[in-house]
Length: 197
Image (cartoon, rainbow, N blue to C red):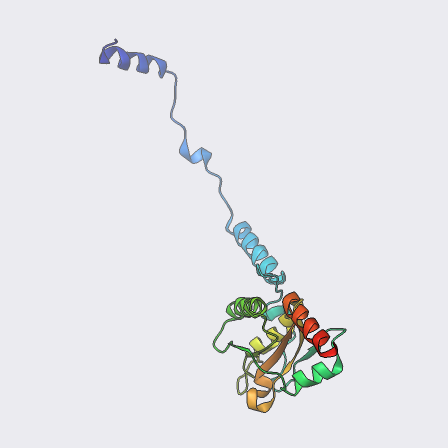
């Protein structure tokens, strides 16, 4: 085993030709304008890109056509019977679930709407209502209402929607008709066959 002095002597001899690094020479000077331009370019790219949440609903308030407080929301997928749509529009279906989006940010509303629709589907709910408000009496248009009109058609299980009747919130709320689950479809088929037989 070597003595401590021998180790130190060996280290000094091994390091005798080593010189300290000049710290100033190794620095790269970044110009302030290049950094600012890079930051501005990233910000621009982020704002131009449409928002796509993990739930697949696209569109932020910058990319959505803004509606007025009294615009009626209406949508019907091809294949939905006119009588079914008319009953939805007139509020004749039993409302089985409600979602209130008042005081929600756009991101909160997007997540809440998607989760609400998924919960409705899981519980075989056919008709629901979404309260989003009219945005009446404000300087800006009704953002959440406009977003709802943009997002609902993106959800394949949404068959139709229409602004609610006055007693349910008028143009500040929207009836939503959802696709029948396979189980409910089978139940209806069996019920119709029993009536005939």
